[in-house]
Amino acid sequence: MSTKYGQFCPVAKAMEILGERWTLLIVRELLLGNTRFSDLQRALSQISPSLLTKRLNELVDHELVIKRRLTEQRRTEYHLTASGKELMPIVVSMGEWGMRWARGRMDDDELDVELLMFDLQRRLDDSALPGGRNVLHFAFNGLKNFANWWIVVDCGEKKLCIDSPKGEVDLTLVTDVRTLTEIWAGDTNVSDAKRDGRLLLKGSSILQRSISSWLRGSIFSGIRPAEPAT
Image 1 (tube, rainbow, N blue to C red):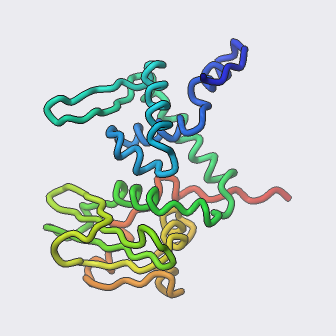
Image 2: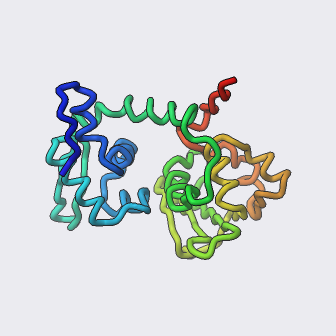
Image 3: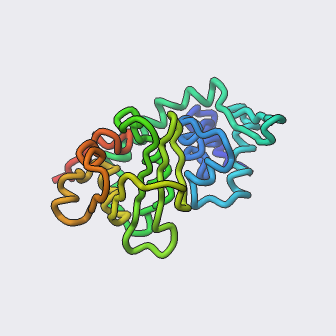
């Protein structure tokens, strides 16, 4: 059962819907265009399928989300209603506030390679890549599981893979999760990571020179942490 605050205050009423664990992060993913259960699970890798189902059903019950069954494609999709879409500026503001005041240094257990790669694939600017098929290989040092990822860009479609795709790799990026997360967050840049030996690029010289154009960071990467109070 959802938390009840016993107050008529609209902030309290909103929190009764949005304050449950994972709920607002699910809304975040829906706002970013994820509609399939499998994509939501991938972007929120720490949530169990049963809890994700429960939270989605709660959002449907509160009419923030509509559930659609696509019979021909044999799958279900989740789409935000008008009230759900109205949360966009709230989520953006929370992200901006979090970048300034809440994040601090990222702990090792917060370095989620699945979320990182999912968002890098989503944010990658394929218009800055050469025409035709491009295969990008991300090799992470220090990981026992999910140490290798591939992003295949072909005919305007971006596909994220954990199994090696067919064909040649155009560019391999060898790094660690913390370094690439710092690049994604805007805490460091590609040039510094290369100079420090934390990022090694192997393959197409064209892709190496243009990497800062197509490897885009978080939508909040331009926001710097606030100065600590003195």
